[in-house]
Length: 272
Image: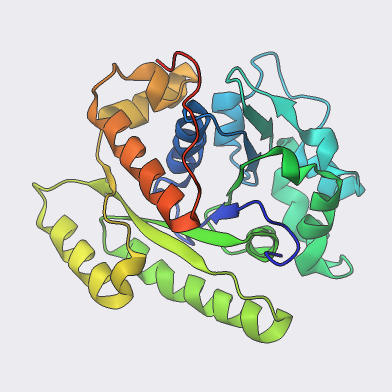
C-alpha cells in the first residue's frame, strides 16, 4: 500500500484489548490537528469508542464504515467532519460486529479495505489513523494490509506482551503470503506507573526485544484519560494546559513526526 499512497496511513493495533488504542488514536489525531495537520480517523473497532468521542451526538450518521464495507459502497460516503477543524472521522457503525463474517467470503478478502480507500481523497490529508479492534480478525488484517505503518500500544502489564507474538506472526504471514511488508512505526508504552515494578520490567523486556522501535516516551497512567471520553472530549479539551496527559501526547506527536519524517507545520490558530 505504501508504494501507492504517499500519505502515512497508520494502523493502531494490538491483539490485546485495554491497552489504550483508542486513547492514542483520538488524542494523537487531536494533537496533530493542533499542529496544523489535516487528519482522517477511521474507526474499525466494533466498540466504536472513537466514534462516540468524536462523532455526532444525535445518533448514528447515514454513512459509516460498516455500511460501506458490507454494501460495497465508497468509503468516502462514511467521512464526516468533527468539531475539530482539520479532523475528519469515518465512524464505525452498529453493524461493525458482522463485518468479519462478511469478509470471510469476500473475494480478495484481505484487500477489501484497501479497495475502499480508492474513493477517499487521501491526498487531502496529512495523516490517516486506523483505530482497530482488540483482536486479530479479518478486519484488523485489512487495516494492516491497507496501512503504510503500524503503531503498537503496549500497556505495562504482562498479558499484552504475550499478544505481541501473535501480532508479529500475523505480520510475518502478511509479508510471506500477501507480499506486503508493513513497517512498524514503533511500540508505545501505555499506562505507565513508575510506582509499580511491572512497569520497569515490561519496559526493559520491550526495549531488549525491540530496541529503538520502542518510543522514547510513552503514556503515563492518568485519570483524565479515563474521564475525558465520557465527556466526549480529547485530553486537550478535558485537561488544563500544562497537564501531564497533554504533555505525554505532545511528546508522542513529536516522535511520530520524526519517525515519519514529517516537516513541522505552523500550529493551528489559537490551540487551547
